[in-house]
Image (cartoon, rainbow over the protein chains, first blue to last red):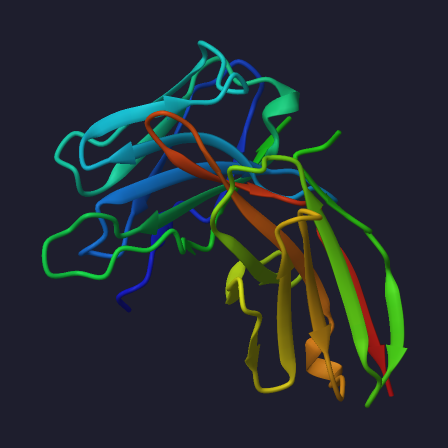
Length: 119
Length: 112
């Protein structure tokens, strides 16, 4: 499967614990995005990487959230001291922009998401 | 005003019906527009990009009106398998990124 993959698919944790999610984008994509989606809402932008550089963070991303993409390939999203309000689906998407020889597009392709439940 | 606004529905239509969804966006600098489809508890999947001249893909037609900052999606000859939530998506250019902003989605239920 050459699409976007995310692990784990489901995570149940107790309030106050730390959790980490992983996203592997489509291999030739240089842009990677994290979104959060709650029931009845569209995905909300959290943060975005171009290669290894984190270029934008939403104000939704509190100090308890951190994301990395150390080698410009996979990315991790960590939530420290989880709260019940963090319960949501965390989606990762990737796209290709400015890669030599590749078509640039704003079209983003999503992974299956990690569903987080904080009890 | 919300950045991207959609009627949440639900739209309940019989098989074979034609249904239209509308969406408005607030940032006049937006340049890219999309419709995504999302099935229950699944990830959004790109349905189609929306071009200035309007575009069609089989039973689906998308239109863009930049002057009114309005996007539409028309589905003809609805199938049971079209039942899903349809997300209107617009890019919001800032000085260093082009993030996508999603509407809350319009739910479509096609019944036999």
